[in-house]
Structure formats: structure tokens, C-alpha cells
Length: 319
Image (cartoon, rainbow, N blue to C red; front, side, top):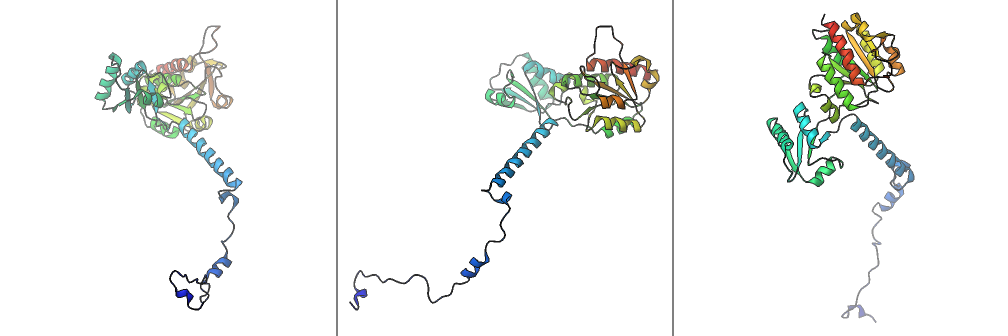
């Protein structure tokens, strides 16, 4: 009925859209498209994208493990006896963690006293936290943190030795994987006037907490260098005028008979107790010498052999 739309409660229906207006450019934008199709590796829901993400995560994890092997992570010395021995030896401790309500015997009191004298932070933590940071080791309520070791460069090690007032004397270790052996070698190197120790990056002991402890503080005085390739490092030393002597059971002469050579700029190379020197390192040495032993003894511990050879070198250099 005409006029019925004005009655109470009536609703006027309006047509959708705006027939009097244009598209406002919306159609042109739709025709423009979204640009070139992204690569499969860049589309989050594509299989190639997921494969690329997994490969990246794997590479990052591998890099983290590599950094951890090269000594970028701090070490922990756990237990009361090891902790007090480390403090006595002058190991560069950065923090001491003590469990809450720990039974403070003489060893704990000595660690606390020495840490206070050296201004080393003392942190009281829960036993659960100690279990976590020591990976569940038997810590007896105490853990001592040792910073990552700052390795020297083999070239810098030689430069410092050449600048000294004594002929260079360097110890190189080939395949020695026990950190306690490394620490003992450093201790002998310090006792007999060696300028430093060179170890390869791979298949070799690192300057861990165990090596620090075995060195009995000598690691503070004798630098340790890390070589990417031990054979190349030995050849570089030879070009600088150093004589390279390898200690090996297959040597043709006794180390005590190398009097003149031991008094010259020298590199003493020692291998592992089981395998000895590797083939390439053995071929690089200018001479192979042995330590005479009674029949029935196959080989000496690397640190023991280093001590004997370094004593001989020091004896001839003192003449």
C-alpha cells in the first residue's frame, strides 16, 4: 500500500553496494596479481622449506658442538679434594659454587679462604642446581668453574721463543688424548725451560680442568698453542731453523746421543703411548730417536718420555 513504508516499525531496504560509484581501482589491483611465485624453500608450508629448516638447525647444532670442542665452554672441577687441589695449584678459577647448608670440613673452608683471598666469587646454590651444572657428577656439594683456555698461535709461540735469551725449545704432541698427560707434559716443559707446547686441533687432549690440575700451576707459565695441521706447523718451524726430533721406538739412535742437536733450536715431538707418531709427522721429523729401555717394556707414558727427553735437552744446553 502506498505510504506503508512510513508506518511505525517499517524498515526501508536499501540496495547493496553503491551503483553510482566506480570500482575505486579495486578491479585494477586484482588484475595486478601478487608478483612472482616465491621459491619452494621460501614457502612455509612447502616440503622444501621444511627440509631447508632442518638442514639449518643441523648445521647450527654442528657448529655449537665444534665450538664446545674447541674450548669455548667453561670447565667444572667437582668434588672437595679436586677443588682444593685446583685452588692450591693456582688454576684460574672464575667462580666457586657451594651447595646450601653444606657441611664445611677443612677442605671446604680452605677453598672458601683461598677464593676470598683471590677475590673469586662464592655462590651458594641448591643441590639441584649443582646437579644440573655438573651434569649429575658426584660433586660433594662443591663445584669450581674454570674459564675456556686461551690458546696461543704456533707462529706467535715461535716468535716469542726467538726473542728470548735461550735457543728455542718447543714440545709438540701428536695424538696424545689424555688431558692428564698434557698437563704433566706442561709441568715438565716448565721445569726444564721449554718455551711452549703445541697440540693439534683434532684428535688431541684440550686444556680442560683435568689438564689444568695435572699441570700443578705450570699452565700459567708455559703457553699452549693449537695447530690446525701439526705437520705444516713442524715444516714452518724447520724453515725458521729449528731442528725437529721425534721420539719413537723405531728410532735408530738414543736421545742421549743427540748432544749437539739438543743444544740447538729444537722441537721435541712425542706421540701417544699406544700408536706413537703418525706417519706424516714421523716423515717430517729431521731425526727419530728412542729412549733406551730394558727388554719387556714396550713404551713409556708420553709425559714420562717428555720429562726424560727435556732433561737431556736441558743438560746439554747448560754446558
